[in-house]
Length: 349
Image (tube, rainbow, N blue to C red):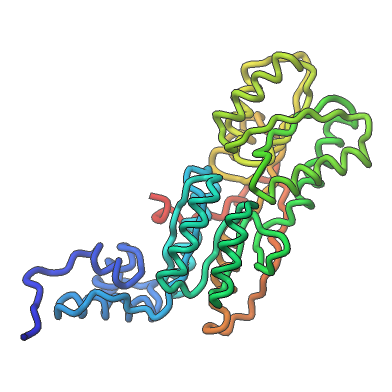
């Protein structure tokens, strides 16, 4: 039987899927535009040839790496996903980005197993501290598939981690809260009290610095089981009705927008200090409008770069090693050029 040739020109989306690159990259290659890696050019041309000659549409890149992140987890996670795509394209690496239901251990475990079953060459994922996840990670790791956690890690698994030292980040937030409140008052901690090890470490660090350096300050828990802005708003609103004396709020995770919403509905004579995490266009606006005083930031673009370098270091002979991401303290006075997402716009669409 002869080769069946396609009668129409392959679509850009089809080429991109086979080549493991974005449609924008395909467009640049087809139109001979600059700023495309040699490896990406080769992948696109081979994908185009395979489609026009009727060959099996198999990936032309020998290795494929997986990234697993939570869905609907806020703007900073959107930045992280886009940063992975940006660096993968720049380096000519094929990645698959999967978004799974936020704070759902079963969904994360299932996606890890799927990646392993499809022959992943390496997996970067945001971990959940859960027995099912730990068991799955152990099984996948035993298959010889490199694994790496980002933003929130796992303890005692021998899995490398790239992100903040979250205990250090929490202590930094506590130290600044103590200074800004002059060591007095009642402080609320809004946190997604389970599954994210990073949140546990931030909360512990925050409490430990207050306990040792500012013992006159009291702490009230605002536990949000789904780490959502809506839940943060509802829980904090309910507590503020009983505790109008709260003079500071530390938002450990993704509920900063809800935190500000609740505070706006409860006025008081004094000024409340608000500290949150991760600089985005939304939290930047809160800083400018004096709704938030301090953002403890981690650079998602740098996390993605380090993660890809680490997963591919054997074949790429990278000199980059796994290391922490610096804790950055952002206020409205040092906002200039702090948000490093200029190259991510087309990946955020």
